[in-house]
Image 1: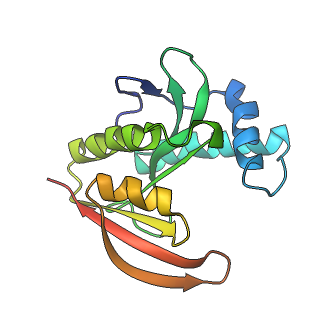
Image 2: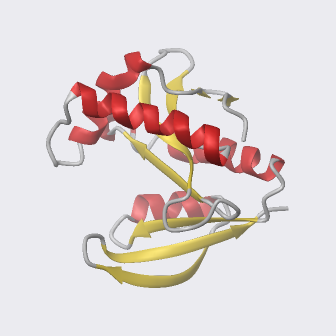
Length: 162
């Protein structure tokens, strides 16, 4: 997958070590505390390693005009496979409702299509109606639901690629 993607309003490019504080703040919004800087750097290093081994990773989303990191989007193995990976995204709450997730995920979807993959997956907590709407806009359809000890009810969605 391409490591740099651009849309009208967004730029997705590999993580830099200087993005550690943005990543820490994004993780902190989940309510599980703020990870140490070293932990954020480990996560960033893991994203670089994923790109080297799988050919895809999560990329920070930056607004083109403002230049700030507003979240991340990309492909992961997650609960799926290298051949049929999961699309994943997370954005700061302050930018929710502005179409950024749909825009970023659309760029990742196009990049995944360019790799010759035939299908993508996504897994979303059933409570997350905003993410479910984003995926529906992008043509994902519900496949099944599972119950997981930590995550609770998880909706599995899939989308064939042209």
